[in-house]
Length: 292
Ligand code: SF4
Image (tube, rainbow, N blue to C red; front, side, top):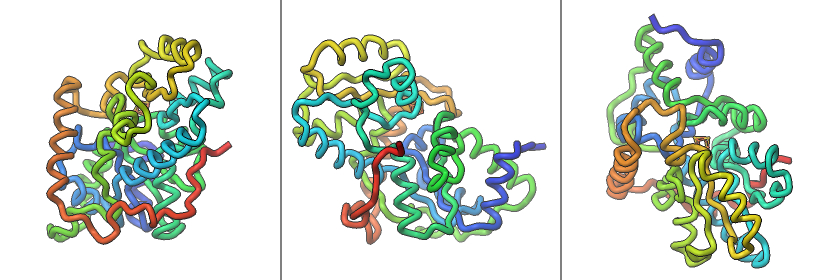
């Protein structure tokens, strides 16, 4: 029998009694099949399902502007909440180097609340435990943060209780609700942010430090502090980036996980974008700054 903790029970309650939006982290192909996962999420009760990649695109755009407008400054990527906390606690002198742009989860939550309405509950689903704390700190827009493991528990619970919804298996129900983007699907990889920015000729390789995993953090911070040629640190706490996150179920090696992500990226290219496909104009005026 599947037993849920109080947090997961509250999510089941929201799925059954409220309008909900699933904010699906871009590492999902490691644990779930696309596009079946979208249908399964709807069967669980999610009213809408969106990818975080649109938020990543907005973040990239803002990062590029800030870096361009401040040619003398050095910056640290603030997408990983564990890294943000670690810098605040262990490298307080570098706190102001963290880019003043909030994480993909929070950007997307703010966006969908504005787009679809504040009455929707937003439920992030990803590979990360640290997102739970970040969600609490941003409870004005993120209602819950689940790991992939927890999503499977909830699915099993709903199946056991016979409360999965009857959703027609048509094309629309297997597609994301809007704001579907391609370029940033590599965001969860170590170095994924920098590589999508470098392709835009903003930084060259010599100006970037890429670090994923606890072992490289100390050296990355040392190099960053002692050499002003470095303009940007693309840094994630988990080894292999978010593909190595503790909330992922898959135990395959990193290369296999990466391959799943690339396979999905390739497959998704053949899906017709819906009407509002990744356009910046839809986010015009959205506040994406970090909460102070
Ligand atoms: S790198 Fe790890 S801790 Fe950081 S956001 Fe990704 S899963 Fe979370």
